[in-house]
Structure formats: structure tokens, C-alpha cells
Length: 368
Image (cartoon, rainbow, N blue to C red; front, side, top):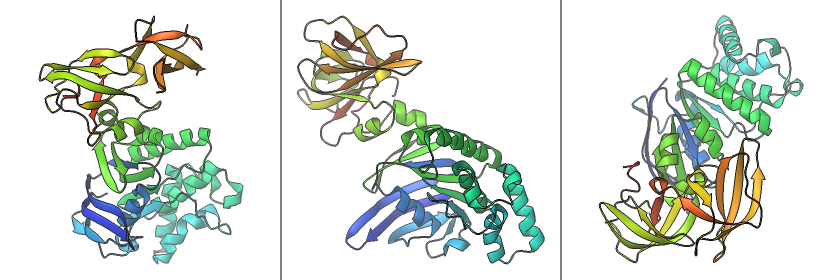
């Protein structure tokens, strides 16, 4: 096991700046997930750590040793790719042993490591099979086993579940979480799926355009997003957003005027903004309550999704076209075409400024 430290890390391809001054510390034994939209640089960052791409500028340390110029085989990392990349003519045993044989390890050592890894991943009954005889989940476990058998200090995963169907993804998420619990090894995992990030990570790194937008635990990113981008990316369904204007505010609280909701008195310190400032009001679907329409607070229900244990109600303001989502436990008495009022839980409202879409100072007393 080992820690990973990135200091002012940069990667440039030609005239394109992909990774921009990334600073990050991954602690020994930590499970860190890089998440973000396609093209944000998360896979490139992983490849820089693995040594599969050269670093343009900055410093990368593994276990306090600088590894910028070390080849992949000398960094003590194992990588599991999106494609399984298994040799089709080799058995499961041979695939897992291949890297060890290339390293010229003794035959007894190779066998001991392969068998120990197979026991951890429950592959003992499959060692004689070839990849074409395995399911997608079994192939992914073999790919993980091939990396694990080398006993790397760090395990890297590059979107390993994206080729699996929904049920297998759930199963493999559980397998990876249990694997981390058993091994206690340092793991860095890349995905575009925020559900994978929320369920697996000790710490999530949200990337945007080659920069880190926010780092924190899943709970922190969900409850205290630093920017509107993070608030909209983390959470399913996504956070609701409405245009708002600051009426007045001080350290004791503020009053905002939000589209469709009228004036709201919030327990927020808004001294960083001036009256009349344009804001965006954000609130999670579970922090909205539906009530009988009142005055200008009138939203039309445009769709109702029944998901078994909960219901998603989609709404649009009568005086606008913003689509909002309310989440509640099933059953629901609400119907398409019905007019309702939206009542947000004021303790869970977030305000983002219009300058850089950052969270306004003192977003909520709970978050402070």
C-alpha cells in the first residue's frame, strides 16, 4: 500500500491543455473516485499516475518517492481497464500468471500468488476456463485478478463496469467494495457514473475541464456542494435550480425572490452579495413539499413516475419553463395536469452566485 500525491500536475497534448495544475493527496489505503463528464480529464489523470502518459509539468509522488520518470512496471501500480484485455487463447490461470512470468518470478511464487488471488475473487473453479467461456462479470474479476496477482501498492480502475449490464454493475460494485474492505489497499477509480462514485468512494474528486472542482466525502459533496456544477452532477435525480434575486441579507439570514416561489426568508449569511444580485436557488427533490396552489406559487404536474418505493413528480411553473422534480415515498395522490404549490425546506436551500456559480457564503446553518 502507498499514498499518492499530485502537485501542480499538468498534461498538454499539442496545443490542448488537458490537466491543469491538479493538487491532490490520496492517503494510504484510501478508496478515491475520479468522477466527471466525458472529456474532463479523469482517465488522463489516471494514466499519468500509472505511467502510461508522460507528465508535462508538476510532480507525482508514490509513497513519498517522485515517480515522474519511472516506467509503469517500476511504480508498483496495477491497472484494470475498461476493456478486459484478456488473452483469448489463455486460460484464466494463464492470464493471471502472465505478468508474473514476464517478471521472471519462480514457478512456486507464481502459483502461490495466482491461487491466493483466485480465492479472494472466487475464481478457483474457473481457472481452467478460457475467456470465451466466462460471463462479463467473471471476465472483469479475472482482469482484476491479473492486476492484483502482482501485489501492487496501488490499484487503478478505469471505468471497469461500463461494459456490464445494470444488474452486473450492481453486483460488481459490491464485489469491489468488499475487495477494498478485505485488502485495505489504496485504490483509485475512474467513472462517469456518479452512482458508482457515491457508493464506492471514501473520497470523491469531481473534475471539470481538467481542473478539480471539489474534493470530499460522498456525504459532503451531496449536502455541501461548493459549486452549481457539483450540485447538479452529484445526486440522482439532480438538484433543482431556479433563478433568484437577493432582496437583502446579513449574517443572521437573507431574503431572496425566486421564480415561482415568491420571497423566501432563508437562514443564510449573504453578506458577500449585494441587494439585487442575481443568484441561483438550488434544492434537492426530497427537500420539496407539494401543497395546494397559492397566489403566484403555482406549478403544473407534467409527469409522475412510480418507482415502487418512491415517486418522482415532474413540475413546471405556470410562469416559466423550468423543469423541477419532487421525490417522495409511494403511494402518491398527485396526478398529471394538477396544479400545486412548491414549499422548499428552507434549511436545505443552496444559493449560488452568478459570477462563478460558487456557493454563496454560509449556504446553510447546517452546512456551516
